[in-house]
Amino acid sequence: MWKISWLVLLVAAASLSAVPQGAPLIIIDHATIVDGTGAPAIKNGAIVIQGDRIQQIGPRGTIKPGAGTMLIDATGKFVIPGLIDAHIHFDQSGDVFTRPDAVDLRKVRPYAEELAWTKQRLPITLMRYLASGITSVVDMGGPLWTYEARDIANKTANSPRVAVAGPLISTASEGTFAETDQPVIVATTPEMARDLVRQNAARHPDLTKILFIHGSGDIEKQFAVVKAASEESHKLGIRVAVHATELELAKLALKAGADILVHSVEDRRVDREFIDLAKSRNVLYITTLIVNEGYDEVFGQAVKLTDIEQQFGDPQVIATWSQLAKTPAGEIPGGVPAPNLRETQMTQFTNLQLLDSTGVRIVAGSDAGNIGTLHGPALHREFELMAAAGMRPADILVAATRNAAQVMGREADLGTLAKGKLADLVILDADPTRDVQALRKIFKVMKNGAFINISSDLLK
Image (cartoon, rainbow, N blue to C red):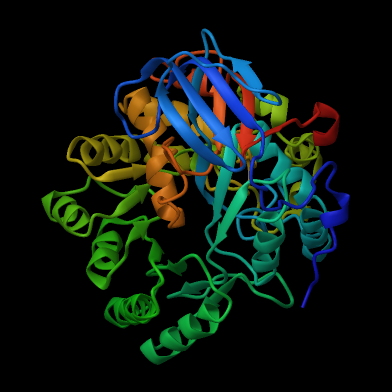
């Protein structure tokens, strides 16, 4: 099995350790606190942090810091929980070579070479999330090596917290590119699905991820596979996330026991049956609106990057997007797909608006790693699209904090600012409840009670 050897490459990434008794205090004073619950902001508030936890939070009183206290004057600033991207893939880089099933450039760069580069680049990729104000991520399915990536990342200062699903269980065959350690495994029978869940459980996944693709298969048999994988997961205390982008499949996924839908429904408008199913299961609905846009912009050679994508996006990834124009058509089997995926966007927008208005829990996720969707800053473009669909900025913040922490299964520790919770937070220069672009106006990022300082030189 591939061994990760990049821990030593992380600059200033000391292992996290237990905080001794009497650790110095950090006080963030005179702040407007937006706690991630959707409650009104606390104006002129203060947060007291000791070690990795929030000790006190609320309207400020008379603070007399003792010796060794770090006092942060946050006058005119806003404090929010650390952002969470609830849907990413570490085994995909976001560059034009990362999905040969979408556009096949293996004659230009062999897939094994691309995957090795992606692994080698991972320490810098992780830092891009923190620079973007994202203190936690969920890898929604990938090879076995993502488990080791999780375990190292969760002991590393300059890395977001990581939850992983491990290899996806699929109802239909897709193209395979890795010679070993496949990210997707097809289950053709309920018995095989249960066995795959049990094998994965031995590695302590945070989720089971099921890829529900109809294709040319028998939908009843596929439903039986999804149901068996869901039942076995729940039996083992593992929550279930399902990829089902078509309304019919999404309904079946909910009937089979899905706890999380990892993409927007995009083929047609959701109906009352779907809404009732989603609410009865208290499902978490992850948006991933940006991913189709990313493919279209790269395939159409019409990329438009936001300011934060320009600032924190991987320049080596971005540089590959022009490869399509440089490669002779005969060197691309099947050619370059037409940029028409965004045609589904208005359906996604309508469905998001309907589900949000009826009280379904909405979660922000970018599907970063797919072609054109950058690790780290892409989540901020996702926020813009959620706002374009009609969500209020305050609700988008909840979707990227409290609700996303529920996807991780870490809501007891993360996702909101409260006494006793882990001190993962972002200090902003503008009000995130008025404009989602305020979420990119980052003053300071704290993870685990320590401020993170990442030089732009480290992200090159």
